[in-house]
Image (cartoon, rainbow, N blue to C red; front, side, top):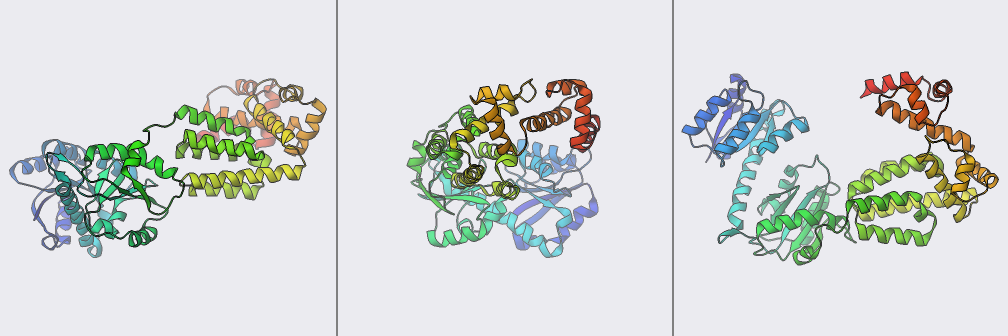
Length: 468
């Protein structure tokens, strides 16, 4: 039997929780209760305990402090949080301190109480079985040749989802850093597992079947998989609901094949959009991606930057909106490659609609990038034309067709966007912001700002701060 203690400063809540559940049928016996942290610690010194249910908001020693102290003094005791708070950050702090699970008291009812505790008991048994299954000799080594790895794609993914899988019900479940592993000690069917994973986890988890694990040290295994598996699956040429990998191949992969700065530089240079208007540049861009292997968060920032910088000039509103919505569906490099190809196709169609050559289109894109990065400087149409090596007259004609407005109107719009950022992100006076945004006359700046934005710069700043 699992020996448990309930700690809650509200006596009626404590008694209600104890009476709500048929503990003996679940293999649990309540051996004590306490109304505060101090009493709980005294009880733990006198009584052998396996499981502690802890309220977080108690006078004196808080639930957070109690969990930390129990982990330090009684390493074998598992703590489960009892809370009225189910905000992610609040509960996450308790889990970080060592709690193994949490129960929201306001959601616990007669109909679901036993099932909630049963899942907790099953988890404890799985963890105990895991320790027994992995011990070989003096060090922990894998007792199975194959294992299923589960990597969550979103923060809200919970390991409770995994407990519904037959592979987890029939095998141990090991917690690694940001992933879970289930050594396949018993019968396992790949086809059945693929069908189950597609139904239960598709779109929320990445899964991999790793072979060649028998007798591998568990600590080394965790280090290798934590450092490499997520990136390997992200760039796998044929991503599936269940990707098969050999552990010997994983070990051959370098731990850090790229420099983050180099990957950032690659994506920054790709803002020139050469890869969208030239097939050879596209192939070169893809090859560089596979060499540098940017992380998923770097792709995310790159995609949002593309939409922000180019949607008004190169994309129809409905196309920009669809691309923006689809960003969240990109879970691996194959998805991102398709998304980038779609963006590229939109740019190519825009070029054909405008009747521009690749060379002129590339020059106009360079001009816009130069204008965006120098919007606060005293630049004019002649300056920009010289930078891209075009005559002023021809540049003026092509730019108006490309942007749908004159050079001057486009530059003023960029300067106003710069001013909006400075108003929200700095405490500089309005006259200084006008100057830094490329406006020589702050009164003209304020008048133009009100005409275009609908309010004075000071009003825009005040409203922006109120929304933070």
